[in-house]
Image 1: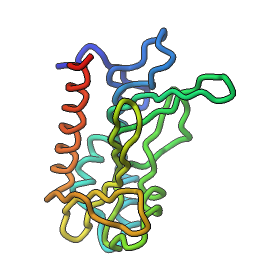
Image 2: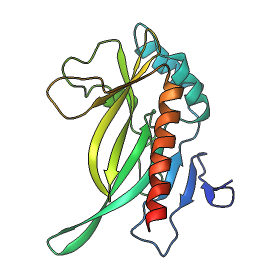
Image 3: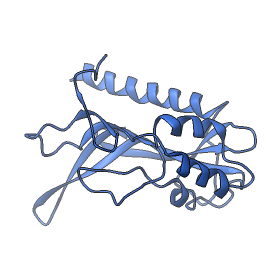
Length: 196
């Protein structure tokens, strides 16, 4: 396994795959972050907060991980002669944060807050559960929100740009969506390595 000897586990159970090495200040805290499983209390809160229903498929994911930030990489930029880094998360599954995030103890993006930001025309029965971005040579070329239809369980992507929600891709389930996007991004990273 690729990360078998290249991971750390924080006190709260969050897993850092390919964590940043002390000498590499320009790298994100880890290539992948899998947040500790969601508590029963947090899952009950989600079930009670979302009407008519909170998707069972997401609850199953939350039993394993309270969100994920996958394929993280820093993008550098210079401002007033000083170099800064902005972390791009290529695939994110939102969760419920339990504490204020810090540099060394990140928390997942808040599904309740992120779901509030939607383009006009987004169906009311859609729940925003994540996001993904497409990159070309470290530049963001596309940003998409991931939605699940709480009535039928299908997953969708909607580009963040525009004035109206337009479904770009459809999957039969959240699982199919995440697997497809994971392998798509992973393949792109493999191709980039081959070109170097």
